[in-house]
Image 1 (tube, rainbow, N blue to C red):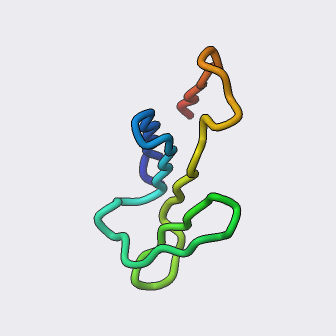
Image 2: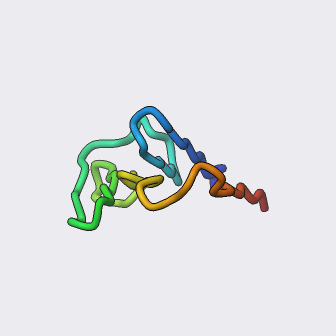
Length: 68
């Protein structure tokens, strides 16, 4: 498995998580829960975007990134 790429964009208030190369993104699917699934041409989920990620958090909310 490739490395997982996590991008927190405080300007757009979004969190992107990629399980595969973002360049493979072909289509997006909204879940209706402020989450957008990113899919490749074979309809495999290669990532997701969480909208309004800091909506309910305060500025001191810790973010932890784990590497395995």
